[in-house]
Length: 167
Image (tube, rainbow, N blue to C red):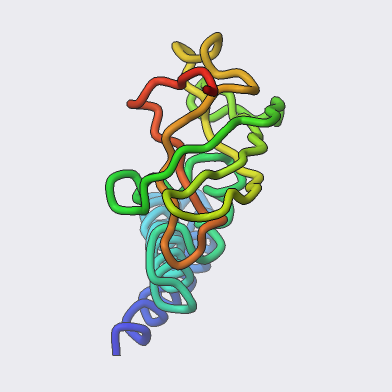
């Protein structure tokens, strides 16, 4: 039932979007064309976003098309901090991705995750590196991470715990 509501909202947004484009095509109808276009665009994006991320194959904010984009940009998985499985991870390599989010660098990390009572395993992970920690986060340092219990390859580095020397 909820799935249909989001699809109807997206369809209504598309109709309003098309009506808004028609309304903006003439000076005499532009007064109502612009607001209709903006409302239609909002409804279309909201309906499609909610449908793809929550209902069509996802259980949370890091699923669907927008979730994959968040993971690529290094802004996803933050819901794992405090709710995932706490682990330590050794940074084996790191490189700049060339991507910035809110004027902060997204870094690709190669990590060796060391779960408590389990065998270490490698993970490649992208995440924003806070500017204040740029000199402290280097290969050979150990960071606190939170791993997804259902998918240990999905994780988030907890920057509130300072990186430590590997002992």
